[in-house]
Every structure is written in C-alpha cells, then in structure tokens.
Length: 341
Ligand code: HEC
Ligand code: HEC
Image 1 (cartoon, rainbow, N blue to C red):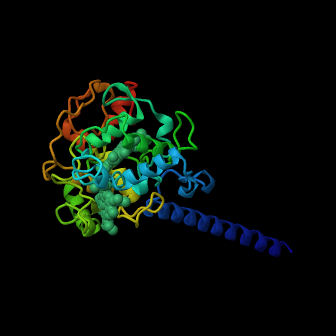
Image 2: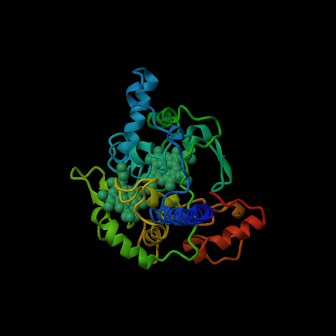
C-alpha cells in the first residue's frame, strides 16, 4: 500500500513538473512567435475597430453632393486640381491625396480621416498657431503637393471638408480614435541604416515604385498608378512623410501595398525604419525645393524626427533625421517636453 502511494506521489510530481515545463516552453514559443510575426503593439478587439461609413448612405441633397465631390477630389486630386487640373491648377505634382490618405482616408493606420474633423481647429506646432481644418488641408496642398492654397471659400475646399466631416461623423470632439494616428512602434536602439534600406527597397518596393523611386504614371497620364517616393516629382523636404518616424510607421502598416496591414505587417520594425531612411535620405536622392515653408518658430515643439535644425537640445541634425531616437525622447521627458508629434 505504502509503495503504491509512493508511486502515485512520484508519478504526480513527475508529470506535474513535466507539464509545467511544457507549459513554460509553450509560453516561451508563443512569446517568440509573437515577436517574429511583428505584431503591432496596439491590440484592438473587433468591436473597437473604426470603420468608415457606407458611401451608399450619402444623401442626394446639396451637402451629399458636396461630400461625393469631396471624395472624388481626394481620390482624383490631380485630375481636378493638379498641374493640368480641369477646375484649376493648384497642386504642383501629379500625386493624389489618396496616395497617402489610403482609400480616401479610410484605412486604419493609413493616415485616415476618422477623427480629423473632430480635432480641428487645432494648435499646430509647425506654425505655433491655431489652424482651421481648411488651413490644414492647404498645408498638404502646399506640401507635400508643392501647390498653391485652395481658396477657403471655393467649392473644392467646401467639398473636401464636407467629405472629411462625413468620414468622421461618429467621432467625438477633440478625441482620437484607435488607428487615426501613426502606430506607436518602439524605436530601434540604433540609427536607421539607409544602405540596408536600399536592399529592402530593391526587394520589396522597387517592383511598383520603380528603380529610381519615380513611381509609375497611369496610362492616361492623369496621375500615378504607383506614386513616386523621391525625385523632383515627389513630395518636398519638410512634408510630414519626409520625417523618418511618420514614414516608417506608415510603411510598416501599409507597404508593400495590399500585402501589409497594421496587424499583419510584412517588414520588421527595423526594416521599416531602414527603408524609410533610404527613401528620405536627401544625400542620396533629389527632391523639389520647398519655398517659404514655415518651420516651427517655437523649437520646443519641433518634432524629434524633423530633419532640419535648430533644436532645443544638442543632439546633432543627423540624429534627429535618422535616430537613435530613444536618447532624444529621454532628454525631453526629463524636461517635461512633449515627445509625440
Ligand atoms: C505624400 C503624402 C500625402 C499626401 C499626398 C497628402 N497628405 Fe495629407 N497628410 C500627410 C501626412 C503624413 C499627414 C500627417 C498625418 C499624421 O500625423 O497623423 C497628413 C495630414 C493631413 C490632414 C490632417 C489629418 C489629421 O487627422 O490631423 C489633413 C486634413 C490632410 N492631410 C489632408 C490632405 C488632403 C486633402 C490631401 C490632398 C489634397 C493630402 N492631405 C495629401 C501626407 C499626405
Ligand atoms: C504592389 C505595389 C506596391 C509595392 C510593392 C509597394 N508599394 Fe508603396 N504604394 C503603392 C501604391 C499603389 C500606393 C498609393 C496607394 C493609393 O493611391 O491608393 C503606394 C504608396 C506609398 C507611399 C505613400 C505615397 C508616396 O508616394 O510617398 C509610400 C511612402 C510607399 N508607398 C512606400 C513603399 C515602400 C517603402 C515599399 C516597400 C516596402 C512599397 N511602398 C511597396 C504600391 C506599392
């Protein structure tokens, strides 16, 4: 009897330890697996995900017509207001808003307009002023589109604002929605490496964006099938997407196009930073001149990854451009300065 009890006791202990170990290994594997699939840090449950409203619900009244026209302007910007635009020549390149504000500003972590209308007028550090939504739209027309501002009272500006308001109809005043801002990735410990970025570019991006980043113009010559990433026909320095963190987080969640999503990215965090550094390295690539850009009169609120000094800290310009960003963030936290832009 004693022997049987002993056997039962030892067997239980043995299997207990065995399964506990298995469990630990399993957990460890899960953790490792999590890392290698590069899951985004923001975990959202399905019912929390924002979705754009259904276009079929747009009414046929005057406002509805403006909303529909606004959507067309976001999708086919160059056709309407590009260098050969049928209603006026405002933007200076053939890019469309939707090239960056993916699917007319409806993609999570794809520069969407889910809460934009609800957050304007807003203090903007670049101007150190309060900007209306129309003024913010004109910022994108002046840069990245190297254009001249749309008149605030124009039918086109009204339409764009009506559309942005319609997309964000369920948002609350002054509040963010998950996925409306670039995804928050942990910064790599080392500076981004443009040379490694070039390798990644050739492997993952060149097939669409071209060997020289020039993109591919559509057959009808109106706009791009694949927009340019650098060169004189692309966006100028000082555009938000010329900043490393903005570009890297966008690329991480959305590129290669139709393959990557925020919850199933293709590139690793480091790869996204490296390829963004390659694209936005002005020592390697030309860009159009950016005349008369207002550049953060209050340097306390200049974004950490804005590539042009002066800065409030003593970190060199090259570090603000390529990282490592962690020391800059720590420096700012110690002094109570903002770290997110
Ligand atoms: C080359 C890329 C690019 C193009 C083209 C572009 N934008 Fe932007 N736009 C950006 C980036 C990057 C931001 C900053 C987004 C952020 O920080 O979350 C931005 C921000 C905005 C915002 C403020 C969004 C918010 O929620 O605060 C508006 C409005 C906007 N763009 C409108 C437009 C319109 C309208 C067009 C076309 C006329 C356009 N943009 C073209 C890249 C672009
Ligand atoms: C399968 C084709 C394809 C591949 C591969 C691809 N892209 Fe794109 N990319 C697009 C398209 C199309 C758009 C514009 C989306 C739209 O207009 O709806 C775009 C837009 C962009 C933009 C914003 C617009 C601009 O011109 O600046 C960036 C930045 C970008 N891609 C970077 C990359 C990077 C980096 C890679 C490689 C990691 C990559 N893309 C791979 C098709 C592609």
